[in-house]
Image (cartoon, rainbow, N blue to C red):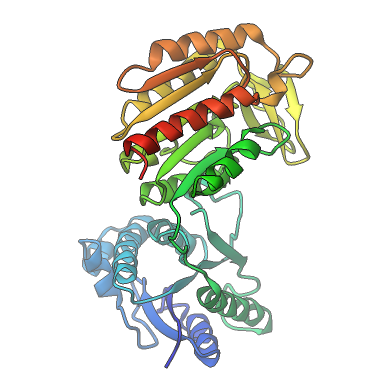
Length: 409
């Protein structure tokens, strides 16, 4: 009996040898295999558990419609919708423990949709000719996706691509065996932050919340971290969130690649999870250090954090625009929201002497937040900096009040 089952997905009309090889390696290591064909024109060379017809039908379409679409992109999107729906349904029914997919640009496009539909914690491996390429938008990468370059394997098996395929087979099976599901013995508070050189509140809040019997998961708000935070929140994985680093929302609005997708600051509210929110880092935009900044930011002050990321200062108009969007998104929430505004600063680098020190910009931002955030969202304004002890104390005060009245279970 296999201990874990892996779903193997690909185009079995043209990639059957490679897909079969991965399946053989998984079985040789003691794992079980389910196979899914996402071909369109050809027929599977190997026997599969879920045919291309079953895949297309799972998405409310048919192979005939895919063929008649008359374009490979339209056809593959039909198959991607079906494979996504079928994989999600199979996982809900406990049919598999991890998934591995194989493809070039077409197969990778579909694989990204499939990974995005599966919950956090399900091992997801994509063997791709464009593994982590700039062709892949960051917000299409599911937070826990794993990718490996399909080296030397575009057409047929050989010694080079066997090394890649065997690694992927072993990795997905090993991950499925090693994955430790959350114990669920303590309620989890989800928190966003950045490195401790820019945000300090987590150092106070984490031990304080743990003393109260809660577990604390802190997410690094540099794109993928925010995606993971929103994914878990949307699945109801937190009893409460302390969303204090909203830079990914500003990045999204300013066109930065360091973003967490369109759902930032929406997952918890839509899932009915209470939120304590602060505007941490919303006076700056993340830009990759190794790229020239967009022309609109070329003359701004920058804080260069390292060789990967730097932060450019936003002007007053941009901050007001972001403040209005914060208010709009919080208004959508289906559970209590308490917004804390530390009026003296929202990142360590906006203190006097640092590149982001801009009292006028902070005052304009605070003014627009006051106008944009309305009941039932509650607001507490503090005459302190986000990294001052008073901020952490205020957040704990709101949290303790919610525990006391049953808002946080």
